[in-house]
Length: 180
Length: 180
Image 1 (cartoon, rainbow over the protein chains, first blue to last red):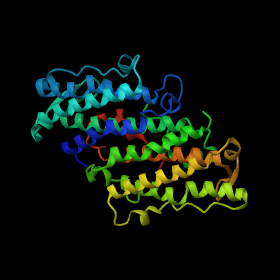
Image 2 (image 1 turned 90 degrees about the horizontal axis):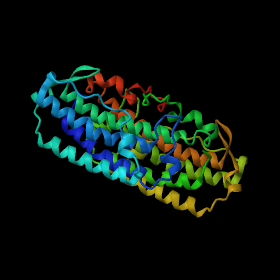
Image 3 (image 1 turned 60 degrees about the horizontal axis):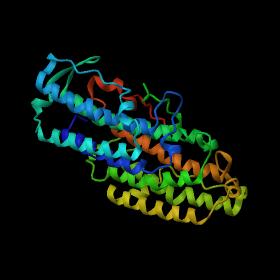
Image 4 (image 1 turned 180 degrees about the horizontal axis):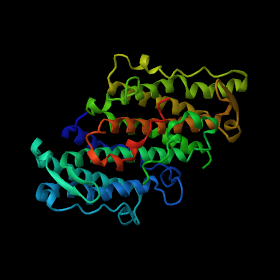
């Protein structure tokens, strides 16, 4: 499947409501439980998504359109959510994520990107040359990577509770490739 | 984390709305795309969840309470969604899943299970002796296994589109342990 901008926007528009439906007012045993020391819980992951809305996706899209390969993206701070989340409730983070995502999609739609815009190139600090199309596809796949991670982290809380069913539950076999 | 019935119910109650927010009216390139021949797409997975509501979780809970280990559970038909889904739209399946889950949770709450009930044992055709507590914990973890799977199957559709970012996206490293 090729990148399709409308499909990307359709998915990006749904993630905040999906996370809201899953996580709002869920007991903290689910939302604050992680997999091990230094691993993320659902609360951390929503903070990470917020940090991406502020510093990653649209700022990089703007850089590609404005500077092309002449200016390298700022490296993304994978621990930036500590600042985003401090002192906030999960409900506040869910609201903030929904608001920022909505604003970013309004800006993205307003760009009226054409195929030739999507082929424009920028420079990633680690990956080298990337296209705007790849950046926007990654924004959507990044939502899915973290929905995948949230499912895994929450399922981990019941690793013992499921008893012998553990071997039938795919999510409990997942080695946690989302973490690094 | 031990099994906690209220935590289980809290999660089970949220899954239909989370899937609804994620999947309803999403382009079919996301919801009908699978990973390979004979693998499931999001549409199939919602059908599988419906089939579980009808034939797996509450019927087995009733069997444990009524017969204990004296009667072995019916084996679960992992391809039962073909009958559940035939001729239906994804929107219809999402509605049906929400309705069945809601009815099942009403019945579960009505049982007013005490700790000694949760310790009651039943007999699984492959796993042998299991407890009611393990069955109910598995019901919740099973939702998460399929949310994990849906995220992975949908992300797979953008495997090429993300270009060099593929190596940073954990979900694209997931080997698909949910399938078997």
